[in-house]
Image 1 (cartoon, rainbow, N blue to C red):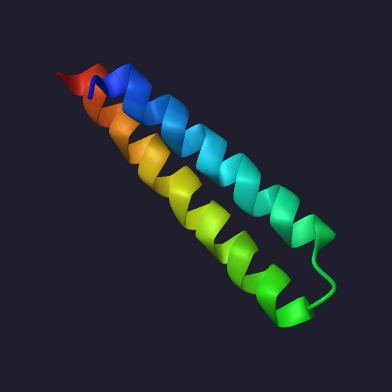
Image 2: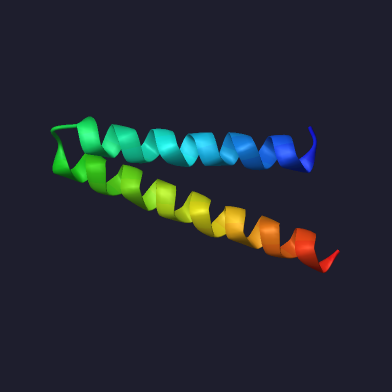
Amino acid sequence: MERTELMEKMRNRIKLCRNLAASTGDPRTAAELRLMADEGERDLARLQADGLNN
């Protein structure tokens, strides 16, 4: 899998987590999904920064 393809999949999963968090009626589930999205965004930022440094 190419780096750009991986980053696009990560973006889609982050978006999915945010959408699911917004649509669930369970506050604990929503909070966990938001945490997952936040972690994904941090991972994506690290991957992007690493790509700029290589």
